[in-house]
Length: 310
Ligand SMILES: [Zn+2]
Picture 1 (cartoon, rainbow, N blue to C red):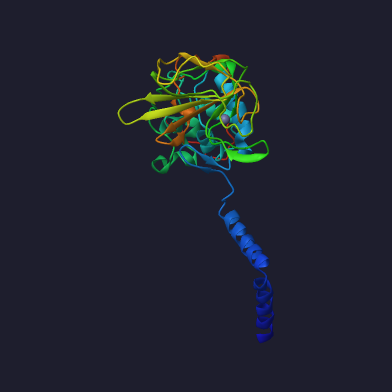
Picture 2: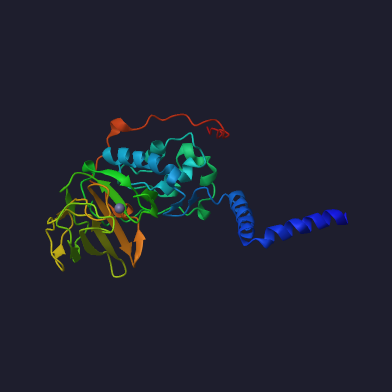
Protein backbone atom coordinates (compact mmCIF):
# COMPACT_ATOMS: atom_id res chain seq x y z
CA UNK A 1 0.00 0.00 0.00
CA UNK A 2 2.70 2.46 1.03
CA UNK A 3 4.78 1.41 -1.97
CA UNK A 4 1.96 2.38 -4.32
CA UNK A 5 1.60 5.75 -2.62
CA UNK A 6 5.32 6.40 -3.02
CA UNK A 7 5.11 5.71 -6.75
CA UNK A 8 2.22 8.17 -7.04
CA UNK A 9 4.14 10.85 -5.19
CA UNK A 10 7.11 10.37 -7.49
CA UNK A 11 4.91 10.81 -10.57
CA UNK A 12 3.44 14.04 -9.16
CA UNK A 13 6.94 15.28 -8.36
CA UNK A 14 8.06 14.72 -11.97
CA UNK A 15 4.96 16.46 -13.32
CA UNK A 16 5.23 19.51 -11.08
CA UNK A 17 9.01 19.82 -11.39
CA UNK A 18 8.57 21.05 -14.96
CA UNK A 19 6.42 24.13 -15.40
CA UNK A 20 5.60 23.19 -18.99
CA UNK A 21 4.42 19.76 -17.93
CA UNK A 22 2.41 21.36 -15.12
CA UNK A 23 0.64 23.67 -17.55
CA UNK A 24 0.04 20.84 -20.02
CA UNK A 25 -1.32 18.66 -17.20
CA UNK A 26 -3.89 21.28 -16.18
CA UNK A 27 -4.77 22.12 -19.79
CA UNK A 28 -5.67 18.49 -20.45
CA UNK A 29 -7.88 18.41 -17.36
CA UNK A 30 -9.57 21.72 -18.24
CA UNK A 31 -10.22 20.71 -21.85
CA UNK A 32 -11.61 17.36 -20.72
CA UNK A 33 -13.96 19.14 -18.30
CA UNK A 34 -15.10 21.60 -20.99
CA UNK A 35 -15.77 18.73 -23.40
CA UNK A 36 -17.87 16.98 -20.79
CA UNK A 37 -19.84 20.20 -20.30
CA UNK A 38 -20.31 20.44 -24.10
CA UNK A 39 -18.56 23.80 -24.10
CA UNK A 40 -17.56 23.31 -27.73
CA UNK A 41 -21.08 22.73 -28.97
CA UNK A 42 -23.42 25.45 -30.21
CA UNK A 43 -24.54 27.75 -27.44
CA UNK A 44 -27.60 29.75 -28.42
CA UNK A 45 -28.60 33.09 -26.96
CA UNK A 46 -31.25 35.46 -28.26
CA UNK A 47 -29.05 36.89 -30.99
CA UNK A 48 -25.89 34.85 -31.01
CA UNK A 49 -24.81 31.29 -31.65
CA UNK A 50 -21.42 30.40 -30.21
CA UNK A 51 -19.22 28.09 -32.26
CA UNK A 52 -21.32 28.66 -35.36
CA UNK A 53 -18.66 27.72 -37.92
CA UNK A 54 -20.14 24.26 -38.47
CA UNK A 55 -23.47 25.78 -39.50
CA UNK A 56 -22.24 28.87 -41.37
CA UNK A 57 -22.27 27.50 -44.92
CA UNK A 58 -25.62 25.77 -44.57
CA UNK A 59 -27.12 28.89 -43.04
CA UNK A 60 -25.78 31.24 -45.74
CA UNK A 61 -27.11 28.95 -48.48
CA UNK A 62 -30.50 29.02 -46.74
CA UNK A 63 -30.67 32.75 -46.11
CA UNK A 64 -29.62 33.49 -49.70
CA UNK A 65 -32.28 31.19 -51.10
CA UNK A 66 -34.90 32.69 -48.78
CA UNK A 67 -34.03 36.31 -49.57
CA UNK A 68 -33.97 35.58 -53.32
CA UNK A 69 -37.42 34.05 -52.97
CA UNK A 70 -38.72 37.20 -51.30
CA UNK A 71 -38.87 36.00 -47.71
CA UNK A 72 -38.01 38.18 -44.72
CA UNK A 73 -35.28 37.41 -42.23
CA UNK A 74 -34.87 34.53 -39.77
CA UNK A 75 -31.62 34.44 -37.76
CA UNK A 76 -29.47 31.34 -37.30
CA UNK A 77 -30.33 31.05 -33.61
CA UNK A 78 -34.02 30.50 -34.47
CA UNK A 79 -33.19 27.82 -37.05
CA UNK A 80 -30.94 25.97 -34.61
CA UNK A 81 -33.56 26.19 -31.88
CA UNK A 82 -35.51 23.56 -33.84
CA UNK A 83 -32.70 21.91 -35.81
CA UNK A 84 -30.78 20.87 -32.68
CA UNK A 85 -33.85 18.94 -31.58
CA UNK A 86 -34.48 17.36 -34.97
CA UNK A 87 -31.70 17.43 -37.54
CA UNK A 88 -33.96 15.68 -40.08
CA UNK A 89 -35.54 19.07 -40.71
CA UNK A 90 -33.84 21.16 -43.37
CA UNK A 91 -32.70 24.68 -42.53
CA UNK A 92 -34.92 25.99 -45.31
CA UNK A 93 -38.01 24.22 -44.02
CA UNK A 94 -37.48 25.71 -40.55
CA UNK A 95 -36.81 29.12 -42.09
CA UNK A 96 -40.03 28.89 -44.07
CA UNK A 97 -42.07 27.80 -41.03
CA UNK A 98 -40.79 30.76 -39.00
CA UNK A 99 -41.95 33.44 -41.45
CA UNK A 100 -45.32 35.13 -41.12
CA UNK A 101 -46.58 34.97 -44.72
CA UNK A 102 -48.59 38.21 -44.36
CA UNK A 103 -46.12 40.57 -42.69
CA UNK A 104 -43.05 38.71 -43.97
CA UNK A 105 -41.55 38.98 -40.46
CA UNK A 106 -40.20 36.23 -38.25
CA UNK A 107 -43.04 34.81 -36.16
CA UNK A 108 -43.02 35.02 -32.36
CA UNK A 109 -41.75 31.70 -31.01
CA UNK A 110 -45.10 30.75 -29.47
CA UNK A 111 -46.79 31.08 -32.87
CA UNK A 112 -44.29 28.67 -34.42
CA UNK A 113 -44.69 26.29 -31.51
CA UNK A 114 -48.45 26.31 -31.97
CA UNK A 115 -48.01 24.76 -35.43
CA UNK A 116 -49.05 21.11 -35.34
CA UNK A 117 -45.64 19.81 -36.41
CA UNK A 118 -43.73 21.60 -33.65
CA UNK A 119 -46.18 21.26 -30.73
CA UNK A 120 -44.61 18.01 -29.63
CA UNK A 121 -41.07 19.35 -29.58
CA UNK A 122 -39.30 19.59 -26.24
CA UNK A 123 -38.14 23.12 -27.07
CA UNK A 124 -41.80 24.11 -27.40
CA UNK A 125 -42.85 22.76 -24.03
CA UNK A 126 -41.36 25.43 -21.79
CA UNK A 127 -41.36 28.67 -23.73
CA UNK A 128 -41.13 30.79 -20.56
CA UNK A 129 -37.50 29.78 -20.20
CA UNK A 130 -36.82 30.16 -23.93
CA UNK A 131 -34.74 33.16 -24.94
CA UNK A 132 -36.39 33.25 -28.36
CA UNK A 133 -38.19 36.39 -29.49
CA UNK A 134 -41.88 36.12 -28.62
CA UNK A 135 -43.22 39.48 -29.74
CA UNK A 136 -44.19 41.09 -33.01
CA UNK A 137 -40.91 42.77 -33.93
CA UNK A 138 -40.54 46.41 -34.88
CA UNK A 139 -38.85 46.80 -38.28
CA UNK A 140 -37.79 50.45 -38.59
CA UNK A 141 -35.30 50.14 -41.48
CA UNK A 142 -35.57 50.17 -45.25
CA UNK A 143 -33.17 47.79 -47.05
CA UNK A 144 -29.61 49.22 -47.36
CA UNK A 145 -29.38 47.68 -50.83
CA UNK A 146 -31.68 45.81 -53.22
CA UNK A 147 -31.66 42.28 -51.89
CA UNK A 148 -32.25 40.66 -55.27
CA UNK A 149 -28.84 42.01 -56.31
CA UNK A 150 -26.76 40.59 -53.48
CA UNK A 151 -25.40 37.36 -52.05
CA UNK A 152 -24.83 37.16 -48.31
CA UNK A 153 -21.22 36.09 -47.87
CA UNK A 154 -21.03 36.61 -44.12
CA UNK A 155 -23.67 37.06 -41.42
CA UNK A 156 -23.75 38.92 -38.11
CA UNK A 157 -21.57 37.25 -35.45
CA UNK A 158 -20.26 34.67 -37.92
CA UNK A 159 -17.02 33.08 -36.74
CA UNK A 160 -14.81 33.03 -39.79
CA UNK A 161 -11.31 33.25 -41.24
CA UNK A 162 -10.31 36.31 -43.28
CA UNK A 163 -6.81 36.68 -44.75
CA UNK A 164 -5.82 33.67 -42.63
CA UNK A 165 -7.00 35.23 -39.35
CA UNK A 166 -9.94 34.23 -37.16
CA UNK A 167 -12.52 36.85 -36.35
CA UNK A 168 -16.13 37.28 -35.33
CA UNK A 169 -17.98 39.39 -37.87
CA UNK A 170 -19.69 42.51 -36.52
CA UNK A 171 -21.98 43.09 -39.49
CA UNK A 172 -23.38 41.62 -42.70
CA UNK A 173 -21.39 41.25 -45.92
CA UNK A 174 -23.61 41.67 -48.95
CA UNK A 175 -21.64 40.85 -52.09
CA UNK A 176 -22.57 42.38 -55.46
CA UNK A 177 -21.05 44.28 -58.36
CA UNK A 178 -18.97 47.41 -57.94
CA UNK A 179 -21.02 50.64 -57.79
CA UNK A 180 -24.29 48.88 -56.88
CA UNK A 181 -26.35 51.63 -55.18
CA UNK A 182 -26.26 51.72 -51.39
CA UNK A 183 -29.25 53.33 -49.68
CA UNK A 184 -30.17 55.14 -46.50
CA UNK A 185 -32.05 52.75 -44.20
CA UNK A 186 -33.92 55.52 -42.40
CA UNK A 187 -34.81 59.19 -42.38
CA UNK A 188 -31.71 60.36 -40.56
CA UNK A 189 -28.52 62.31 -40.43
CA UNK A 190 -25.16 61.53 -42.04
CA UNK A 191 -22.55 61.78 -39.27
CA UNK A 192 -19.40 60.74 -41.14
CA UNK A 193 -18.30 60.60 -44.77
CA UNK A 194 -14.77 59.23 -44.91
CA UNK A 195 -13.33 58.45 -48.36
CA UNK A 196 -9.54 58.17 -47.99
CA UNK A 197 -9.24 55.69 -50.90
CA UNK A 198 -9.16 57.00 -54.46
CA UNK A 199 -8.58 53.54 -55.91
CA UNK A 200 -10.92 50.58 -55.52
CA UNK A 201 -8.36 48.24 -53.99
CA UNK A 202 -7.97 45.98 -50.97
CA UNK A 203 -5.82 47.22 -48.10
CA UNK A 204 -5.36 44.69 -45.28
CA UNK A 205 -4.56 47.54 -42.89
CA UNK A 206 -7.37 49.69 -44.21
CA UNK A 207 -10.27 48.67 -41.94
CA UNK A 208 -13.62 49.67 -43.40
CA UNK A 209 -12.04 51.55 -46.31
CA UNK A 210 -14.32 54.30 -47.61
CA UNK A 211 -17.19 54.65 -45.16
CA UNK A 212 -20.39 56.50 -44.41
CA UNK A 213 -22.09 56.62 -41.00
CA UNK A 214 -25.81 57.30 -40.70
CA UNK A 215 -27.64 58.11 -37.48
CA UNK A 216 -31.18 56.74 -37.21
CA UNK A 217 -33.22 58.07 -34.32
CA UNK A 218 -36.17 55.74 -33.80
CA UNK A 219 -37.55 57.40 -30.64
CA UNK A 220 -36.25 59.35 -27.65
CA UNK A 221 -34.39 56.37 -26.28
CA UNK A 222 -33.24 54.46 -29.36
CA UNK A 223 -30.76 55.87 -31.87
CA UNK A 224 -28.96 53.45 -34.16
CA UNK A 225 -25.64 54.12 -35.81
CA UNK A 226 -25.42 52.52 -39.25
CA UNK A 227 -22.02 51.92 -40.86
CA UNK A 228 -21.63 51.37 -44.61
CA UNK A 229 -18.08 50.21 -45.39
CA UNK A 230 -15.73 49.40 -48.32
CA UNK A 231 -17.52 51.95 -50.56
CA UNK A 232 -16.42 52.77 -54.08
CA UNK A 233 -14.00 55.71 -54.43
CA UNK A 234 -15.71 58.96 -55.29
CA UNK A 235 -19.19 57.41 -55.01
CA UNK A 236 -20.43 59.43 -52.00
CA UNK A 237 -23.65 61.26 -52.84
CA UNK A 238 -24.02 62.81 -49.39
CA UNK A 239 -22.00 65.11 -47.16
CA UNK A 240 -21.31 65.15 -43.44
CA UNK A 241 -24.26 66.54 -41.47
CA UNK A 242 -26.74 66.07 -44.32
CA UNK A 243 -30.30 64.93 -43.60
CA UNK A 244 -31.37 61.99 -45.76
CA UNK A 245 -34.60 60.14 -46.34
CA UNK A 246 -35.05 56.37 -46.26
CA UNK A 247 -34.31 54.73 -49.59
CA UNK A 248 -32.15 57.58 -50.85
CA UNK A 249 -28.99 56.48 -52.69
CA UNK A 250 -25.96 57.55 -50.66
CA UNK A 251 -23.02 55.76 -52.36
CA UNK A 252 -21.90 52.72 -54.38
CA UNK A 253 -20.44 49.35 -53.43
CA UNK A 254 -16.66 48.88 -53.68
CA UNK A 255 -13.86 46.84 -52.18
CA UNK A 256 -11.76 49.44 -50.36
CA UNK A 257 -10.04 48.58 -47.07
CA UNK A 258 -10.06 45.19 -45.33
CA UNK A 259 -12.09 43.49 -48.05
CA UNK A 260 -11.65 40.47 -50.31
CA UNK A 261 -13.98 41.61 -53.11
CA UNK A 262 -16.79 44.07 -53.89
CA UNK A 263 -19.43 43.99 -51.16
CA UNK A 264 -21.31 46.21 -48.75
CA UNK A 265 -20.37 45.71 -45.12
CA UNK A 266 -23.57 46.74 -43.35
CA UNK A 267 -23.18 47.21 -39.60
CA UNK A 268 -25.54 48.60 -36.97
CA UNK A 269 -24.71 49.73 -33.46
CA UNK A 270 -26.84 50.71 -30.50
CA UNK A 271 -25.12 52.59 -27.67
CA UNK A 272 -21.75 51.34 -28.93
CA UNK A 273 -22.80 47.68 -29.08
CA UNK A 274 -23.08 45.91 -32.41
CA UNK A 275 -26.58 44.62 -33.11
CA UNK A 276 -28.04 42.45 -35.87
CA UNK A 277 -28.82 44.97 -38.60
CA UNK A 278 -30.73 42.46 -40.70
CA UNK A 279 -33.32 41.99 -37.93
CA UNK A 280 -34.27 45.68 -38.23
CA UNK A 281 -35.14 45.63 -41.95
CA UNK A 282 -38.74 45.75 -43.10
CA UNK A 283 -39.25 43.14 -45.84
CA UNK A 284 -43.02 43.60 -46.02
CA UNK A 285 -42.93 44.94 -49.60
CA UNK A 286 -41.40 41.68 -50.77
CA UNK A 287 -43.76 39.03 -52.07
CA UNK A 288 -42.66 35.50 -51.21
CA UNK A 289 -42.72 33.23 -54.24
CA UNK A 290 -45.12 30.33 -53.54
CA UNK A 291 -43.55 28.07 -56.16
CA UNK A 292 -40.51 27.76 -53.93
CA UNK A 293 -42.36 26.55 -50.83
CA UNK A 294 -40.61 23.48 -49.50
CA UNK A 295 -42.55 20.27 -49.78
CA UNK A 296 -43.72 19.25 -46.37
CA UNK A 297 -41.86 16.16 -45.37
CA UNK A 298 -43.08 13.82 -42.69
CA UNK A 299 -41.22 14.17 -39.43
CA UNK A 300 -39.37 11.08 -38.30
CA UNK A 301 -41.60 9.13 -35.93
CA UNK A 302 -39.40 9.53 -32.86
CA UNK A 303 -42.16 11.38 -31.03
CA UNK A 304 -45.48 10.02 -29.88
CA UNK A 305 -48.35 11.08 -32.11
CA UNK A 306 -50.88 13.34 -30.50
CA UNK A 307 -54.27 11.81 -29.77
CA UNK A 308 -56.88 13.01 -32.22
CA UNK A 309 -59.88 14.75 -30.82
CA UNK A 310 -63.34 14.25 -32.19
ZN1 LIG B 1 -17.92 42.74 -43.21
